[in-house]
Amino acid sequence: MATDKVMDDEKRIDKAAYVLKAVAHPLRIRIIQMLNESTELNVSTIYKNLNAEQSLISHHLINMRDKGILDIRRSGKNIYYFLVDSAVSDVIDCIYKSKILN
Image (cartoon, one colour):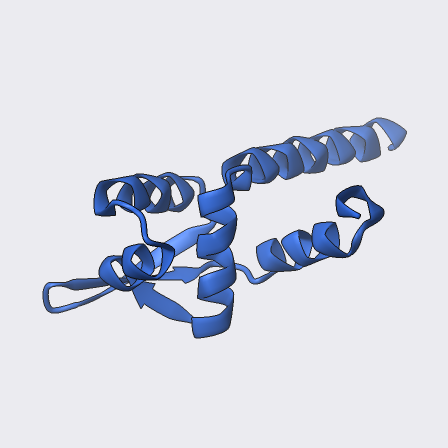
């Protein structure tokens, strides 16, 4: 039984590291913050608000979608991105509130 708990803990730790690596970029953190405030946004809204190249933003969006942090909703020719789980933004908020950044 103790072995099962250790295995479960290891899986959770691996998943936590995976998610943290997936968001460990300033633009990705900004995208997550924007999506947390707006529920869903399309690529052009994101890259205009961040004053970044569309291709760069698309790269980050695809990366986070591939890792299960974001998902999409299609409406005609538009693709809207949204957070799969708002807990990701809670983690970022926790880091902001920690002494690490102060």
